[in-house]
Length: 274
Ligand SMILES: NC(=O)c1ccc[n+]([C@@H]2O[C@H](COP(=O)([O-])OP(=O)(O)OC[C@H]3O[C@@H](n4cnc5c(N)ncnc54)[C@H](OP(=O)(O)O)[C@@H]3O)[C@@H](O)[C@H]2O)c1
Image (cartoon, rainbow, N blue to C red; front, side, top):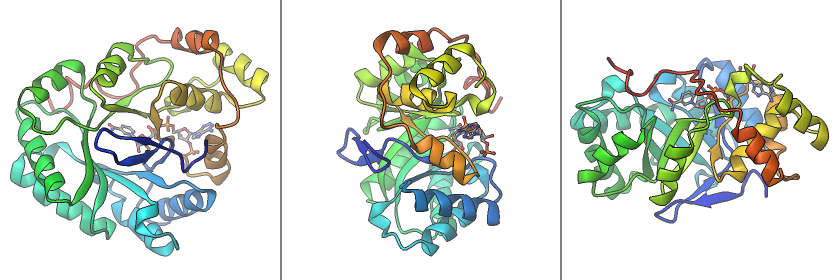
């Protein structure tokens, strides 16, 4: 396995298992340099959002690379105040323009804003049917949001991007998505680096001659979860991509699973937008 290895989404689209997240990177040199170095290292999957305000920089780095569009997998997301049918169609065009692209690989509803997400989903279905985006999905949807969305959705989301790391192991939600062929994708996969000194992670890191961050990213992959660690540093981007040459044993996977303590680093999806 390598950075170019992909999972096949329910509609047949190939999505690389590991991508670069760009949250909190400034749209100028910071994001341009980070994306450039990631592409140099072999990353082919980039995760941005209109909310991150750096789509222009991501687009610039893509244009400056000598990669063809088909080699890349680019995700962006519709923000909370852009939701609604017409608003989302406009937001999509705005994001495409900023990125300088003619199509997107994946467009996500960033958060399940009550009263809006169904109209937003209708807009994503239209963009998908019009061929402007290869795959559509949601982010931060819990099982009750998905139950509600699926009641009248024509297209089942291909992806659900959720906060997922050892201290927030959302097993029930992951199972729910797997049963419906919705690919789960982990955001803040390394817990923003806040508990890499955990003894279980440290011990496994020592055993496999890896770092705690690599142990977590490997755990994602062995759970069948796409992962998008963010780093502005080339050395860490390289480290985060070097997770394909070892395998955690089942008991070790369980040990990491048991680190769960419902530790959300971001907002609770039901609280967002209230
Ligand atoms: N859908 C959503 O609602 C949502 C929410 C949050 C994030 N996301 C997406 O998920 C991506 C990843 O999440 P995230 O940025 O919140 O957190 P993360 O990837 O878990 O952690 C990023 C932090 O860890 C540091 N780091 C990176 N690699 C490291 C390593 N190998 N060892 C030690 N520290 C390391 C980074 O610092 P340096 O950059 O200084 O290296 C940064 O401070 C985002 O960039 C974004 O694309 C989506």
